[in-house]
Amino acid sequence: MKTISIALLLFCLTGALVSAQPSLAVHGSYGFSSQNASNGLWGAGAQLRIFLGPRVAVGAAARTYGETIRYESGSIDIDTRSTVTPVTGLLEFYLTDSGFRPYLGTEAGLYFLNIKLDDVKSSASRFGIAPKIGFQLPFSNAFGLIVEGAYNVVFGNKNGIQVGSGSNVDLNSSDRFFSLNAGLAIGLGSRRSSR
Image (cartoon, rainbow, N blue to C red):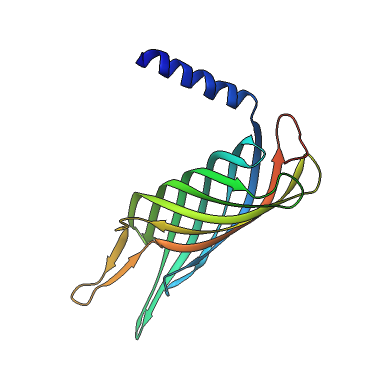
């Protein structure tokens, strides 16, 4: 019975994916870090969406952000370079079927964190989520504008570099930041007016 249930589930999933509408988005990004020492996170990324219907999309996203973290106190002036690279799955719910398409969604997956000060490096990978809100505005059936804002939360971030001894300075990768993504969504496969 278990084998029949699994086979039926795979058959239904395969049928849904065959009739699904894929879309690829490429975008630039800016992140507003919760760290006072950060000068913001600049980046870029891509998202692959599979529309399971006119109002539901699933997919995957990958982007990378770079930031400079500066610590200044008296005679101490330290600049570090940090990167945050989320590789996530995504789920989106669209509020309209065509035209201007606002949506709510979330991304969840691994955030790869790297920080470097001179020759000292530290890296980690942690689970993170990013609830988001955005919209798509089609220019044609083939492509359109995509804009979204997300609040990224990385759990258990201990990725950092400790400088000095006694009264140490701890420099860490950003683990909570609001990001704004804007770019082009490019239709793949059959083109429907609902995209």
